[in-house]
Length: 483
Image 1 (cartoon, one colour):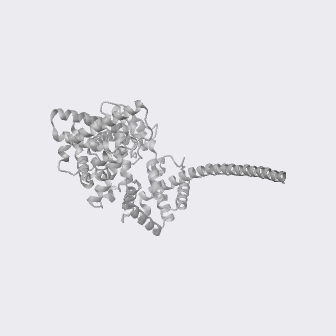
Image 2 (cartoon, helix red, strand yellow):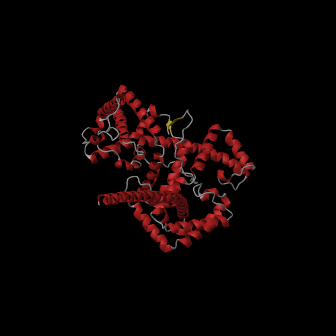
Image 3 (spheres, one colour):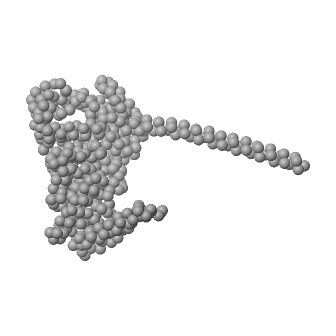
């Protein structure tokens, strides 16, 4: 959601998953690398002006409603004509009805839209800082190999992975409210530029508004340079808050050196009190830390488990996931730990730091190696590679498969010691068990319904049989009377 720096931030509706590593400060790639999805955007100009299905009413509307609809259509047509006129310097000499020509035009407009963020109408537009940072972190965790593996890849591959994560992160913030705010700001910007006779800037603003109004899909909006500038500014503010948080955490570490992050603080200890006292003395930092904790706790494992669960359906037999889940459960019990519920926070985030590290370093690798021998792992790699090579519009499991393949194919790490594989298997297994329970409940309900319907059907047939008998008796009586 868009916020003004002077107002309280508004969070997006979908919360990100937690990731424990802090990103580098220059994560966002150049805007031109972030616009690769724009090729799947709107149709050429002549197709964009066709009425939508909602406008093609089968039933005649009531007079007042019809008048309002007519007025809206007229307004939309007038706006479109105005936009086409204002963006003419950018379309001159182009055949906008030719698809390839239009895609090249749209791609360049989305790239150049970044400059519009410097206009006064967008000066104070930001996303919620903590939400921006942790959403990007979660998307990096899903769609980008870890840093040590990423640096082994080519520059082009690195840009593909990181731009995918940035687009996916930004798409999480594209809501109807944000779209309304951005379009309103673009319209105000155009009016001002028209009065100031800045034809080049006016053409850019008009072309950007034209494209954004033509396709309201979040994935398309997330390729717009204007929104990427908005995300970058929000991340800069988030990094400032993270630096402040690190300074305060250092006070706690001076008291208790074994503290690694905020999650190691135990309530009631001197280190805990020192940290939160310092945080509370800085209202801006207090708001940020509170927001960050809420974001990470609220999301739990849902983002990872949903995506990994969908991908796992393409990779594993259900019995494999059930068996792995049983192994996880046994390991947790052996370490004195419990899973509260399959759909709650990720296993690795519910444990205290010391036990978590021991569990991850000792038990999980052995479990993975035992249940997924080398030949099965090679099959898994091959399947991931094949899925990652598929081309489907915005199918989220495809970039996830690409990132997993790049991560798990690292020759320098034995696959059973690769934490990404254990994490993926854990998410997939928990998602599988959760959905299996839901499926079992749904199946029972459906079975009961089917039995009910079958009984009804039998009842209907019985009634029909009685009716046939009655009719037969009547017919027999008539024959006797006639005889």
